Image (cartoon, rainbow, N blue to C red):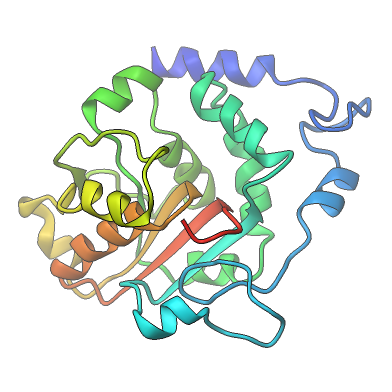
Length: 234
C-alpha cells in the first residue's frame, strides 16, 4: 500500500513548476527556488532568523536547547507552507525528492548529514500515522541520507493532541515525555552523532523533546534539520 501511495504521488506531480506554473519544469523551478529560498542568518541552535553576525537568539543564550545545532532551509511561509500541506496532508509523498534537494542545498546541512552516524526521522504516533498514511519525516529522511536512516530507534510512546492551537508553554507540556529511545536499541545510540529530521518546526517543542530522549540514551551529539521554520518564536 505504501509503495502504491509513493508511486501515485510521484506520477501526479506536475510537469510544470507548482509555484509559478512555468512549463516545462521540475516541481520547483530554479527561478522560484532562487526567489523564495534565499539563505538567511539563523540562530545556531533553534534556526530562528537573527540579524547578520548574530550566532544565537536571546532565548537560546538564556536557556540553551538540547541541540548542538539546528538548521532550516526556508521560512514556513508562501509558497512552502502550501506545498508542505500538500505533502503531508494530501498524501503527495513524491514531494520529498524536491524537498530533500532544497534541504541539502541549505547552508551547513550537507556537512552535518555527511558527519552523522545516524539520521532519525521524527516519529508519529500510531493515530497520526493512520490518519496521514505515511510518516512525512521518514520519507524525507530516506531521501536525504538513505544509508544512515534508522526509524526504529526513536519511538513516539504517547499520542498528544495537536500542537497548532497551543502557545509555547502548552506545547512544551503537551509533548513532554512523548518520545523515548527503544530500550533494546539504546546501545545503537550511545556515543553516536545523531541528526533528527522533521518537515516543519514551530516552537521547537517536539524537536527538543526528541533530542532530550536521545541525550538520555547518551548520544554524543544531536542536531536538528527541518525543511521549514516559522519566523516568530512559538
